[in-house]
Image (cartoon, rainbow, N blue to C red; front, side):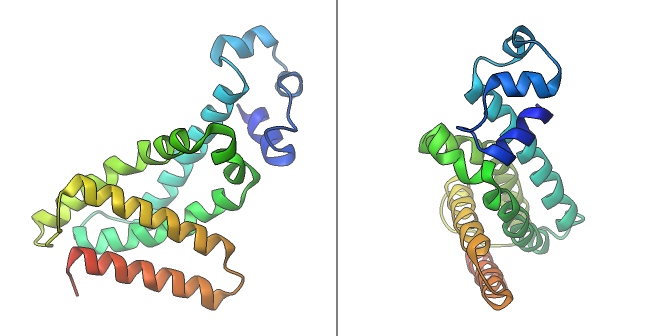
Length: 179
C-alpha cells in the first residue's frame, strides 16, 4: 500500500500501473491480488489509510473531548485545515472522478459521520440546542465542513483562509445555538 500511495501521489491514478506498484513494493502480482481485487480497490485502501491519518490529526488538534461544544468547534476547524492537505494532493483531487460521486461520499462519511453524530449528542447533553434530527444534522454539518475544506484548499491568501475558518466557526456556533 505504501508503494501505491507514493505512485498515486506522484503519477496519479491513471498514470500508475499495477506492474509499477508490485515492482516498487517488491511483491508479486499474486500477492497484490490476494489483498486487493483491482487498482480501484487498492486506491480505496490507500484512501482509507489517509483518512485514518486525517482523523488522528483532527482528534489530536481538537484536544480533550470536554466540554463538548468547545471540542466541536476545535474539531471542525481542525477538520477543515487537515483535510485540505488531502484535497490538495493528487490522490484527493482524483478521488471523485475515479470512484464516482456516491462512493466518494460514502468513503468521506464512513469514518467521520459517526464522530460528528457522537459529538452532536454530547453537545446536546451538555445543553446545546441542536435543531432537527441529530443524525441528519450531523450529515449536513459534515457536508458543510467538506465544502469549507474545498474553499480553504483553494484560498490563495492567509486572509481568505481565515475567512473560511471564521465562517465555519460561525456556522457551528449557529447550529449549536451557542455563544
